[in-house]
Amino acid sequence: MGAFETATARRSILKGFGALAVGASLPAKAQQLLAAPGEELHAQLHCPSKGAWSDLARALKGALVMPGDPFFGDYYRPNNLRFIKRPSGIARCDSVDDVAACVSWARKTGTPFAVRSGGHNYAGYSNTTGLLIDLSRLTGITKVDEKTGLVTISGGSINSMVYKGLERLGRTITHGRCDGVGAAGFLLGGGIGFNMRLYGIGSDLLESTDLILADGRTVTAQGGDDLLWACQGGGGGNFGINTSFTLKTFKIETPVTVFKLTWNTNLATVLHSLLENLQDAPKGFGSKISVTVPARGANCSGPGDGMTVSVLGQAHFDQAAVEKLFGDLWQSASERKVEANQPYWQAQDFLSETTFPYYYREKSTFVKQGSLTEDTLTAMIESARAMPRTSMASAFKFFQVGGAINDTAPEATAFVHRGFDWLFSSEVNWWEPTDPESLIKEALAWQDGFYATVLKRTQALGAYQNFPDPSLGDWKQAYYQQNYARLQKVKKAVDPKSLFTYAQAITPA
Image: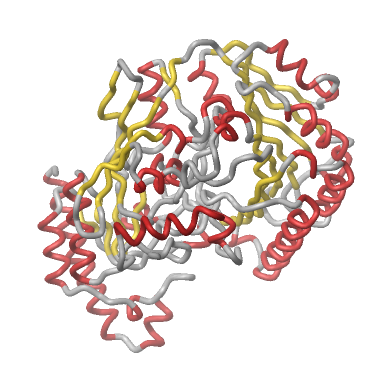
């Protein structure tokens, strides 16, 4: 640790102690006034002593950052601002030993904690008012086996860093398109991307992973282990802290074609035709179809109040074959953007998305093609026209699954959602300072009704655990179905007292 960080950590600790001491002397009403919106009050938590925080600071090679540090807010701000919480301290881990020290300290002091790298958990489960264990400095591809094509990535890596490492190796995996998402959260909850129909979901490629368990042990979960099975879709924050992942990779053999097509008329017919035409695409084809509702006050000059249907995708073959899949839809698109025969990683620049913190809720489920009749899709689009519009565009989407995902049995890994054609999701987005609370409530109530109708009309099943939704009723069944009982047994074996816990955490059997 450099001298600047040492000094910063020391100053942060002292400032944090001062803030805690002042806060403790205030009456409850004053503490409520000081609390950030949506934040749990420190008075409601077990608050470690000054000496305990000093012990943690001495145990770390990285910095312990406390409230009062000028960058404190930057370190803990989540991607979904609905769930912002101010931690009592942030451990910016520089090594696996730092992570182990944090787990040991939290267990001994009884301090609640959360683990994060990218901070993109949709439900804010990587936030806490206790100790935030920040893995964002544990990054990079640390080991490569050129004979087997296996690579090991550090547990704090974000997607963009993984991309750069794989590009240098001329290899790829199933990966997402949001560059700031943590690879750990992506992999532990399943991991969807445009390669999933070709290679399987991200967690299907997991060969082993190192974890720090609740009792402080470091273990390697590998082939045949119940713990590896649980890490292949069981969700992060349940069994320990994953400090590395060893993945099967694939050599990039051919260039790819990437595209985005948009339609602004005949939306229901276009949507039905897209879903029909693309269902039987080769495994080397991946797509996401979106129906977008523009923001309140957007300049909507076209038909349908500005609503559009669009498809974003990638094909491991040439443009001519892509156009054949779309048929007449290709020429009827109001806008076409295509980059054909591109080097793989160069093409990802076309597909990638840089996210920023805002407010949102996403609800998801899995559907089969036969239930998506034109009548049902027409009803969905008409319902979307009536959505209370917020300050940001919202959408409902169909991520194309199937292919290699369905080659694996539902019980073979913790990721149970096999045998489907599409992952459906509905997102409502807003920017709170410009949207009154009443409008947000109306939009979320609309989303609840819309989602319930989709479930009823399509016989949809489950929900995607990497799009966690605090408003779900039976989330255990939705995320894990018949695999939940086995996950509970794994939890009992490695964390019987639920040191690792959050609102939708797996509980021991």
